[in-house]
Length: 150
Image (cartoon, rainbow, N blue to C red; front, side):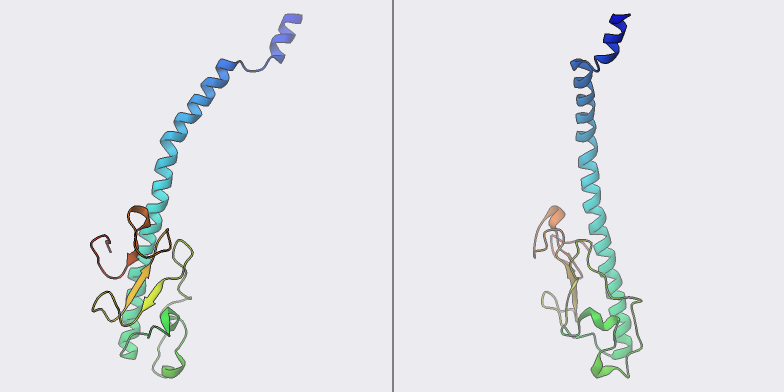
């Protein structure tokens, strides 16, 4: 009877603990890289979709106003009427202010564009929040570069 009581109080053996730790380590090595990569892929996909949506909104603005918002007016002109052209403005073109990119930064906007001959450019600098980058740090832009897919 005393032996049974002692056996119940002993807990796990070292071998049992090691087996559990090995199983957990294997799960972490298989799951974590897949989850981390998918999160970054999803954010890049969301940013590309946002840039395409912003471009469509800018084109609607252009049809009404005859020009794209200036750099100073920015993307806010899609939600709030610019004071100088308020009578022509038929917005809001966006139901709410343009949200930040998936990394929490505002989308960049410039008109006219400086990287291309486009009348405007929209971009997100991505995860590293700096111009340029590769892999998961690639910039998401409305113009096409060698390292950038839109």
